Image 1 (cartoon, rainbow, N blue to C red):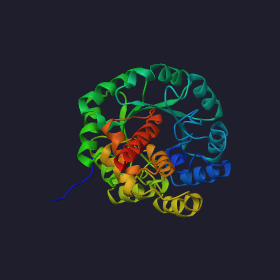
Image 2 (cartoon, rainbow, N blue to C red):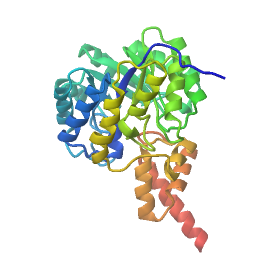
Image 3 (cartoon, rainbow, N blue to C red):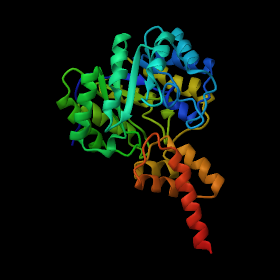
Image 4 (spheres, helix red, strand yellow):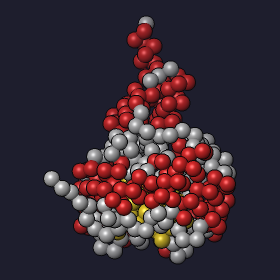
Length: 345
C-alpha cells in the first residue's frame, strides 16, 4: 500500500523561541535569540515566533519569569532576519491589547491569538486590533483533542470572522493520533472560506511528525515546528526533521534542510537545558490529555511533596484541566499526598 501527502508545499512557522521557552525555563538571552533567529532565517522558515512560552506578558510568578524582557528579544529577532517574519503568541487574559501594541512597535509582523478550543469568542478584540495594526493573524484552538471536528469548525469560523488569516488545530497535549489530526484539520478545510488551516503538534505520544503529515494531507497550509523539538512536554514537531521529510515527500517549500540540521545541532544544541522526548511522564501527558506545559511543574511539585508526577498528571487529565489552571497542579498533588498519608496510617 502506498500513501502520498497531497496539496501544495506548506508555510513553516518555527516556535523554538516561544514554545521552546518552556523547556528553556524562559531563560533565553538576546544572544540566544539572535543566533537562533539568524539560523532559522538562513534555513528558510517563513515565520519565527518569539515571546514568553505563555505568550506576551507571560512572565510572572504563575508561569515563570523571563530572564530578559520579551520585547527586547522580539526587537533582536527582527534585527537578525532578512526573510522570515517575526511572530508572537498572545493568550487573552494573559496578554492585552496594550501588549499587542508594544510587541508591534518592537517588530512583530504576525500575532497568533490562542484560546481554549471552545472559547474563540474571547479573541475578537485582539484580532480586530491586530488588523488595525497591519499584522498577519493566526488563531490557535488549544487543546483541540477535547472536542470533535464539527465543534472546532464552528470555533474556527468565529476566528475567521474576527479577522484570522490562519486557524490552527493545536494538539497542546500531544494526545492526537494521525487520524485525529486529519479529521480535525479536514473539518476546518471544509468550513473556512478565507482563512487557511494550520497545525501545531506536540510529541508526547511520539507521533508529531505523523500528525503533521496527516494535517497536511487534510489541507493544512501552515505547520509549526521547533529545532530539536525543543518545547513543552515531550517537545514539538522537530523543524529539521520536518524539513527532511517534506523534501522526501516533494513538498519542500524552500527550506534548506542541511542548514536547519546544522542549526539544531550547533546553534540550539549547545544552549539546551535538556532534550525533550517521550519519557515516562511526558507520555503520561499525551495518554491523559493534559496541557503539555504542566510537565515541568508536575515534576517539580512531585519532587517537593514526594508524589509521583505521573499520578499528578493522570489525575489532572481525569479532571480535564486546561491552560490557566496551573494552580490545580499543587492542589491535586496535595490531595494525592494526603491520600498517601491516610493509606499509610
